Length: 130
Image (cartoon, rainbow, N blue to C red):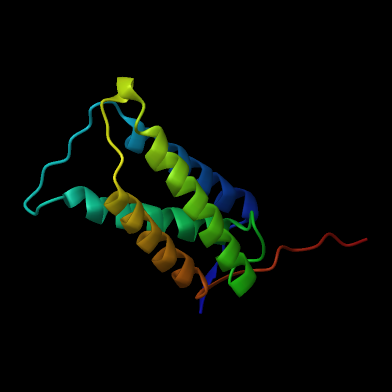
């Protein structure tokens, strides 16, 4: 098990910042990614959506990190978000396209990131004395 010592507000801020960067990156007009392998964007989809899921699970927004119920909620929310993200890329003025293989790699990344979150636990927040 990995224990994350950061307070909840910082974990939420990290997720929110990453989510904003992901949205901007996936909607940047006419962005093209070239690389040494065919379709390097698929690897990027896998990695960034995996990180998105891991950060969402660890943030505690959908439940206690490290629990199966939280992991499943994060994965389900991620699948919906990935579908919205891919479909909004079809806005003509963005000059982007949406593809089923992009969504499948998003889903694979979400599954990996959500699964890894089961290894992460957080320190309990100190309760004020009354």
